[in-house]
Image 1 (cartoon, rainbow, N blue to C red):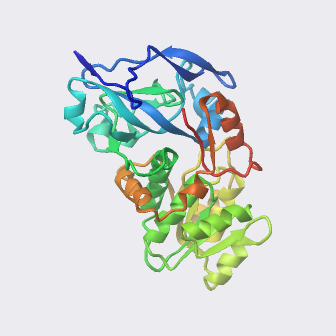
Image 2: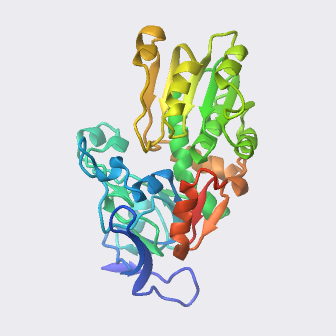
Image 3: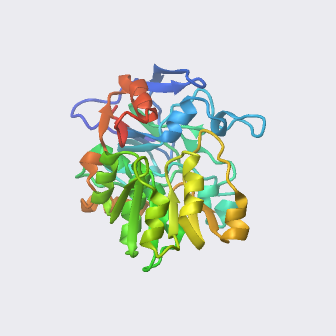
Length: 370
């Protein structure tokens, strides 16, 4: 037995079909009609309010090897799936167990973590669910995403209640913000640290806000856009450097008596930012990599080992950081109207993808409002 509710619009029942973007392979996405899913006993159905377009969506669209494989790895992304992993929606239907299991009610606004962990592999059993071995994710593999009017939330999804008072595109930003906060946690920032954040896109701005909340001595933001650097100031950066006009490495060394930064958080996805980070750090410094790269980065590994004995760390997804991200959004401390710069209809999904992929496009966070 499945309990179905009316949709958020009064006196309208759920339709039989919905519009959805469907991925058929690299650069082969289309807007199609799909059946509206019916939730099973432990599943939820949400009406999607907003879905963010991530740089990983763009790279998947353009056929990056991380998603579609190459001579070194098999394909991970699946064809026939609906993309979109940064989303918020309102619960409009639920299986007979789903609401009680999650302490939810029809009409509640929720967000979901992007990974849907198996709860059975070594990583899940150890609490390291974000590294789940099957690695099924909304919008890429295993489960349809939210570039659609409705989305089925499986029983294994990690669900969080979202603030109802903020615009939907702001609530959907919980996903990239949680990722940024996880990278900050990985850095183990100390009070006396000089922290450098490379890139002032959605992830970088979240890193700046997260790093500032750790109260280090200085947070330095790097980018090539003066507009984004101004926004970085509003998110908590003490100093901004336009790397297209200034020598960031020299400025940071002058700031630190010639030693270099204590922590470097990389959020550009550009190979040149990797060597920049290795050179801007002091000996025994910490490098945290978050980006998804379109091409390989080549560096002198002797800097990491013999020269500086650096701590080089990766960061993936936003485990255990979602409650903090939602609190930060609800607090109003971030300039979200400026961060969430562009919104599109579902019909404009390709324009949204292209805008995110255009480095000169001037956008920060692009969202689709189905």
